[in-house]
Length: 185
Image (cartoon, rainbow, N blue to C red; front, side):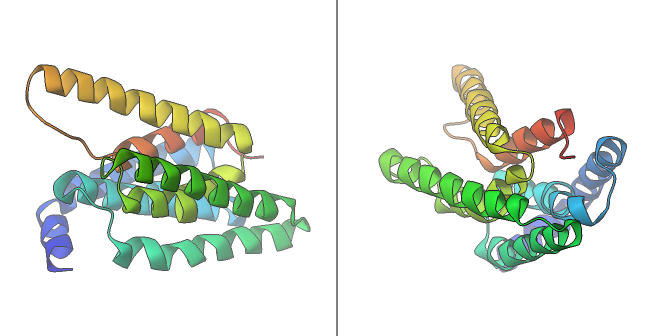
């Protein structure tokens, strides 16, 4: 946990600036209300923090991801109960489970190329939040994240700057873009 604090202490200005920029974009397209609170928590608050940590440490710390997952599900459940529908919550649980299973399969097949932190982020944070938009949002996010990460790897390897890159920032960025382009109603 000391490394996490050290990284965040040294990059707090980046985190705050990115959070403010994301909040400004989201407020325009996805005003903060109970129905969108989970998306705001994941994309505007946790996304910048976890992305900075993943870029610096090549990991998404359980100390942040695991406690945040039930909070996201509670926000989604509260939203569904206020709107009198359990359908979005059911879909969010299903998209979280599906994204977690797909990412776990990819993690096993990649032999360390894809981390378990990415699996947990998809299963507990991004998958459920994307579920409020629909199944297509989950597929679009995966396609966008992996294709942009592939382009980055090809570009950076060509210049021999990096041997590997963290996937977390691409996952959060793709999810943000998908939700901003077609916000949940």
